[in-house]
Picture 1 (spheres, each protein chain N blue to C red):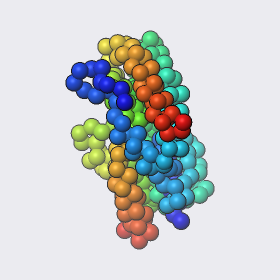
Picture 2: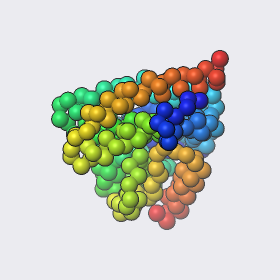
Picture 3: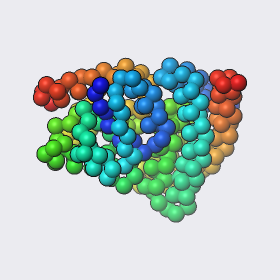
Picture 4: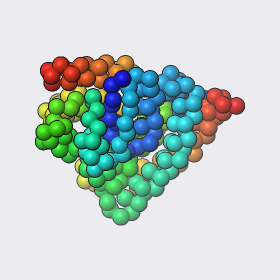
Length: 127
Length: 124
């Protein structure tokens, strides 16, 4: 089973993602950027679901550090955010996220399809 | 289901609760409700404290979290209020945010009541 790292500070969102991903992926959870960066390096997942709005180091900064790290830079990373404002998608993709999913999660198949697509791209080296 | 108390827009969305059941059954619904009724007052209090201290980013972050979890739980009026406050704070202002926080404080007990009843239907 593929492993997905979830970086999310809110317990309700972590619980929700656990329920959606249950049985499909092994889920490793991090509540903040410092723990996430240390954990990702120690146990490289197949994909990262990264919340943008985190206390301390936010999702954009975590992504920048992932992309600047030789070991982590090829990881597929999907932004999870409740900021749905016009132009956000382009902004996040330009920043180096592979994809962008908005909260609340209404249609879980969108998330699952995006995850599958990027895990496959990561495996094929076509990222 | 509560009748909307704002004549034209619904304050709560039962479809959100059905969705949570689809994701993880009555167990997930019940757990999500528990987390929400515990966390929402803390987030409202954090937004209140941010307004009192003139800390725009603290208020914005608290309202952002509240917007996200309210939306997932179908608390539509709370979602709208939080979003309005978040947008004001995002521009660097707290003007009117105190009133929005007060509206949230008044709306939360109604949402809590609605959610508790939904949970009791699930786990009598």
